[in-house]
Length: 487
Image 1 (cartoon, one colour):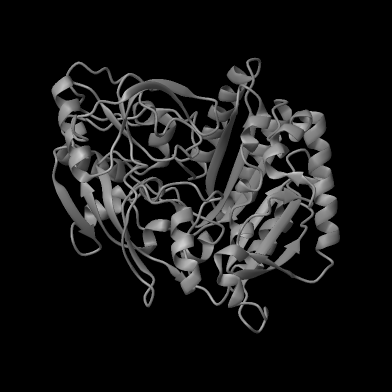
Image 2: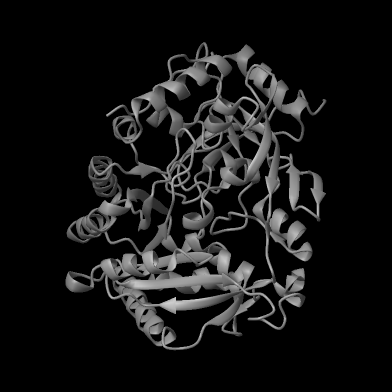
């Protein structure tokens, strides 16, 4: 049987956090023709199709209950790379890891990376990911020169800021609803060496954290904050900021040598003793309120001591991909997994709104065990999550006993966020309702996106569990229900 005609196998797929799942046919593809054939078969059978890479979205963004999920990870060739300009042409299954391994020996680093190196480029662009440098360079889409989009009707449309600019603005961050990226041209970032100069700050509360971000963002290359979710009162929002700046020869005598790939590898053992692959098991006894309260307190104390020391040098990989230090760390959360609630709030309301979210979680007895804080700038994409302000990502452990209360808490958060002019992020979401999403996006932008959906996908072939939950598209394939919460 040819690759174009091969059917996939039924499987239960999970969001990356492990808290949501659904069953679907999983169909691997490795070419435009194979993907076009899946679209045609799905239309004949009256089924919906979702696009999936390595499955790094925390929630249900790449799940499709009862439908077809296209596995794009075999569609993974680098089509061209110019070491002189840092421009890469790649297929959608190429990963962030593939990109840095390709570019770094020549002095190039991906312009925007997530907290893990394993997402695919197609998935990253579909979510328009941001990184620890979002305040300075924006989202991933701002570094893409062009892409080819395969529509559900089988057409390949080349998009750039000059060719189909309205589709360019909508497909970037369009969560895979308008078509599949089959070629992406990306500009990498020139770096002076293989390491960053890292400075540590330990702000005493959220106001002090924001003050430090504002003071540093004009000349820093990277800024990322961690917040202690257990701290209350005058200490609410206390935490750590890590500032990273590119280290050239003036800061790092080994700047050129550390561009080598073997100088970037994460250590096989933590503290020189414990294999990284064991760490999630050793963390299990700590993943509860008592244990994480102690971990957070110890981390803040350690940061206050580190802030008194001189900056230190750290490899790009070690600074960028903290989530990869402990393989399978999410398993330490237990069978229920975790969800992440990430809100993006304009700068003038960020301290008030994010303090309110922390307080609400404390009052509900549902403390986020990890909170990450970032500064952002606006971008031009239609359904962007980016604001001129701050995001706070809150990781919650999910159990059988707290699941209902946790979803209720997050939907209460939605009201606070939407009322402040905030935005949400599809790569992380598991709880957002259609009504809350609609409140967060200007009606004209929703209408423009829906119009492109009707033009390119009139049968609504492309769907996910997420899209049915948050977006009221007008049409549906024959024989396919479009259910999903609307409240």
